[in-house]
Amino acid sequence: MTSTSNRGTADRTPPPTPRTPQSTPRRPPTAGLCLVLTAVLAVSVVAGVALGPVNVPFGDVLRFLGAALTGGTIDAAEAGPYRIVWDIRLPRVLLAAVVGAGLSVVGVAIQAMVRNALADPYVLGISSGASVGATAVVTTGLFASLGVYALSTAAFLAALAAMALVYVVAGRDLAPLRLVLTGTALAYGFSAVAMLLVFQSPRGEAARAAMFWLLGSLGGVTWGSLPVAAAVVLAGVAYLRTRAKHLNALSMGDETATTLGIDVSRTRKALFGVTAAMTGVLVAVSGAVGFVGLMLPHLVRLTVGADHRKVLAVAPLAGACFLIWVDVAARLLAAPEELPLGVITAALGVPCFILLMRRRGYVFGGR
Image (cartoon, rainbow, N blue to C red; front, side, top):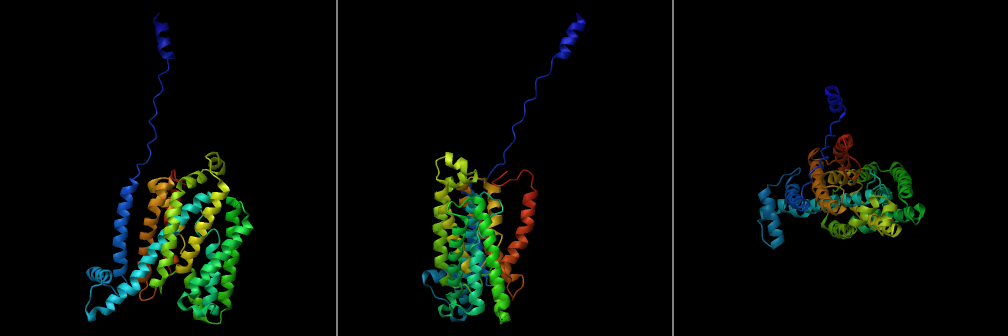
């Protein structure tokens, strides 16, 4: 009797231990994060104007900006610092914010559109096409009659031509793999043409200027460079935010998007046109600033999750703050000389991206 009871007790298996549900990372509230980034952006703009080879005190910066915006007056002895603040640095800092915001948003859209974690605003070959136009201006004097607008005009027209060529070669359905392969192949071809123009140039200074532009620069920016770029970025961000649900669906695959009632081909064509136009305008005013559109989307997704409604709210603010400080570093690190923006973004982006890829559990679109 005792042995039977013991045997029955031994044969009973203990109930399975309930598994603790895997905790999901707590995300900061999107609205609060946007408010914090907006405050950081305001501080970054003032700091970006104040810092440079010639530092201007923060109090003077605020006073000069207040006088310019309200029609106030300043002393004649302060005309020099006032010109540095209002005519030189403020348009440059604002354009850095616009370019950073635009590249970040375009990177988000393109990565979802082609479902490729390595995609960025330049994977479609648009920037390489724009570099051909810009290099032709610098090395041959093309569009010289347009003066200071010659380079940006030629770069934008070349970007439009590259966009049309990518569209024709990739096919009207713009399948993700064909789009990426076409853009990459044509980018190599455009880059080869640009390099040929540089090496064939008889003027060494022109070749140096072309190489500097190819790595990204905001030197020589005026107020005239800002309105078109700002308008295009604002319109592009507004449009992409209305397509956030479409981007969520596309990031899960064409079949899933189709079952959700989305016309995949039509949506991808519209996204291609918007992102290509934004890229062309941004490259025309700043050159090819690398790594912003590749790195920032991943960092934002890691912070707020993969929902594009949240990502597209945070990405432009994060990109704007980031590129302002990159531009400050470009002005200060080798003062009085200036470093190309692409050198600094690569120096920051490469180790950051390697650490991101080594993070356990990270995949495209979040964890």
